[in-house]
Image 1 (cartoon, rainbow, N blue to C red):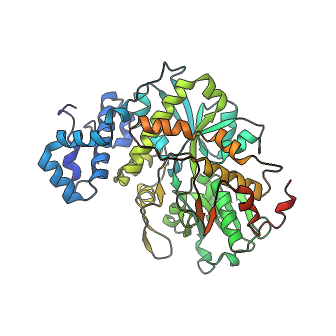
Image 2 (cartoon, one colour):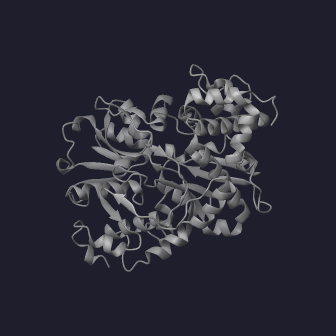
Image 3 (cartoon, rainbow, N blue to C red):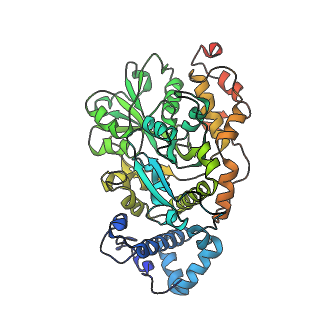
Length: 461
């Protein structure tokens, strides 16, 4: 590593936030770097951000970090970091073969769940894989599905249940699709209109209208689960509407909906606009639940295995950096601009840092409000399938394990994580605690029979 690179370790000073200027040395923000067309600068930004994130992750306490850097110097510090996480493997993992195509279109929705997908661009991870990726901001999840099925997008940001539904032909013709990585965990909330501040008990919500981003979403499944645990039937006691995330705050303002279980940053934007308050974070329903995913149609994967593997590597690397970075404000600066989320930096930073007002007069500190763990656990897919069955979207006999293992590419994800210097977790299935009830993926039918709502579960054939 050349000592001619900008020394961003000077920026560890508490009064000088890390990477407030672009790593290329220009007086523009990192998120604006692409506009100056400086490939060398992109590489400098990528390396500096990665190195700084790793050092801060290994030495989270600022006095200890400064003392360590002063004692050993930057080169020795980076050698120590590299012994734990190989930087070279993050920046340019060995390609498995020539790319079938280099120009790739990837659709995404303007939500914080897309952070790894977005960050892979300014960090240079796509470029390091010899890919020319066009990130296409897309208005809603139905459009995402349709463009993937029409092959207008080669790969995509998905709601994690969408590839299951697409593969099974739920809501569309069958279109086999695979999940490569989970983009994020947690990162959702139930937000209510401020006029309902005195109606915090879900038993008081009869007649409410709620927005969710899509039928086949964790948002819909978690909202239904939450309501049912309070004795509310989500199919008769409330109305649940599909609302694209960018429209949620507007629909709350104009009274179309009383609340929504939606992705961030729109929960925080409702608080920022003083139109809503955060009733509960989704992590308080199921801590560590999956939200969004990255994947592609199986036909694209078969025809472009090396290209898909390169995309896989780029996003795994970006997920690692997002997961270990303590510079969440700097990540917010990357993803907040118009090209990506188009949200006030304050709003995005509140979500990513977990330091936020809830709209009820409280300032909360929830460091894991949004986390990044790319493992596509097949047990997560089994749970999603049980909810599709529970609420009547999926009928007939269901081979839960077979579907989950086909759609969620856990083995591939572990392989790419390992090659990126990230020790993958062991096992295939995990149990989860969801509002006090244990979900055992080995017993999905028993789990379904344990619920009192819906009462007509036995008739779902």
